[in-house]
Length: 529
Image 1: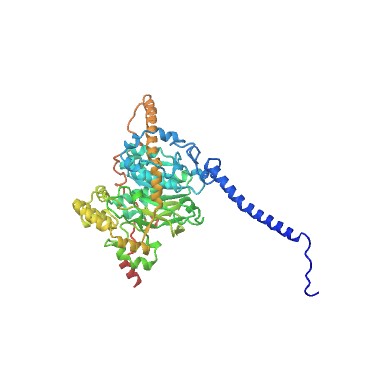
Image 2: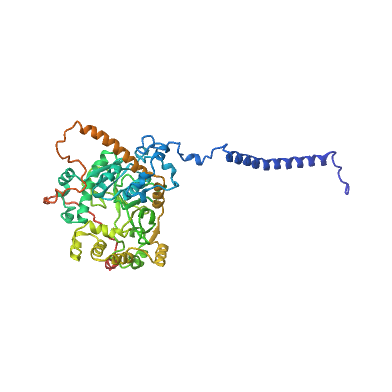
């Protein structure tokens, strides 16, 4: 009937009210419970009741790190605490290698950087050096951090002195080869002397002589690498660092593991250091600006800013611009100069990396001018320097260092090497000609602060004492019969190869790749026309 409402059921209002109250209590409980649990967990963690899973992933001083058990540097913190504080100060390179008050990489403590058992590929580096510990140790341990397993160091000069070589020999994975009379006689019998690919560099002084020496050492390093079970070999100078950009992690091993199996050689374009002041002492920790390689730049950018990037120097780079390379260890492998590898039986299949690079720290210190001058006995004339140096900038630098006063050398160095114009620097950074790279700097500083370098020196001294005691006992029962040709020679002996004649060979090989400059503006214009 219209206008008549149905009567309400008894208790309907009470039931609705109870349901609403229950729902409110449930919502309140669901809101408060997570907050209470979070507060409880925070209190427990603050009081030390819970372990932080993130922090437990990193080893502490009491935990073992891969390779610590057999480390020659010791396996616990107590070893480093037992090293007297005067140990580092007694070394000539203490200012650079001494540890700091804090450690950026505490998990490096006691780690021997032995990566051979950590997987593949196994990578080795060979170098020919006369540098001191202040340059070699940071260079060596940096490359251990990024995955290098073995080092074959051909040493002479400062690097062959007992105080330096004993430290290098005490480091796991390092093989030191001295330039002895026996070594020179063996290299004088190398097949390289009978071939044509390196003949253009024979019997010339300074840089040409070094280039031949590096090639002969690389030939021996291939045999050493094969015997050690290495997969890849790289020739690198101690003023160069590998920058393994492009891999999923900052690792040379990871980078090379992603190279296709049919590739025989990998080319790393080089970036050149661009120092911003003339008082650099430790380039590896003070230089962060680099000039990018032609291969990593758009051609329009490279040639459009060529004059500004060159700054009235002979070429785009001060020194070489054709990078370095890594080669797979395989049959018939041979060096092809200090920058490349080749194969006697085939043309290697090579690729060029698009992001990774060699960071070349060249002329980073003002003293590099005089040190290069002192290593070469050529006359400071335009004709004679061509006989001694391959690259034009090296020739000019040698003449300035040989004929100029201290003030003239400083002025020339600041004008041609140091990047003092901040506006130009900013412009070239924005355009991509220059770039900032901080990873090597951070790793170097972390290694130094963790005490790795000073600990290596201290450990070598201890091993030297023990070895001396054993040798004294041995000498008491052995009669000295004459000069030991395997004994390290500091001064070195005159090469037995200088009197050899180049034998005629019917086999013609691709000529050695010398250090070469980047493409020039005028040369490119001629090619286009």
